[in-house]
Amino acid sequence: MQYHLSLQIQPGPKVMKVQVGHTVELPCVPKGVPEPTVTWIKDLKEYQASPDGSLVLKTVTLEDEGTYMCTASNTAGRDEARIRVVIQGWLQNFFY
Image 1 (cartoon, helix red, strand yellow):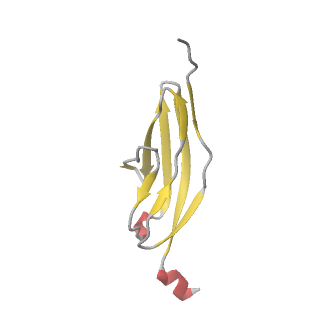
Image 2 (cartoon, helix red, strand yellow):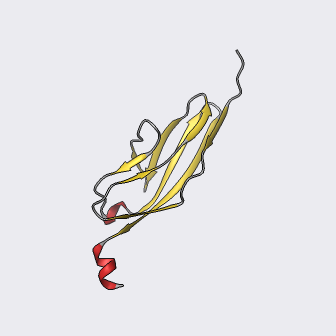
Image 3 (cartoon, one colour):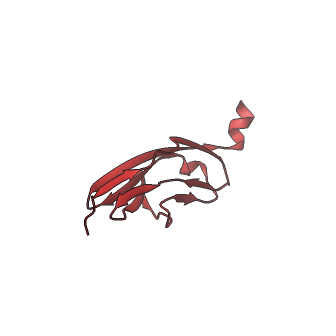
């Protein structure tokens, strides 16, 4: 059997906005042969990906704001995608 090695993360959102205390799911959909592994990193901290590659942040706080990087890798190489999470809290609404 012959197959071609490949790896690519499907395009997704660049920015996701979420209210303080809510849950947000950051998508990361890698396609590749062989099946790629997915890791998420923000500020040098690694997060556990869901089986589908996404990252679920529950009960978000202002500290969850920032840029998250999804990295998919297999023997064909690696691909990266970034998503910026913007947290919207009640104080922002108070001042605007």
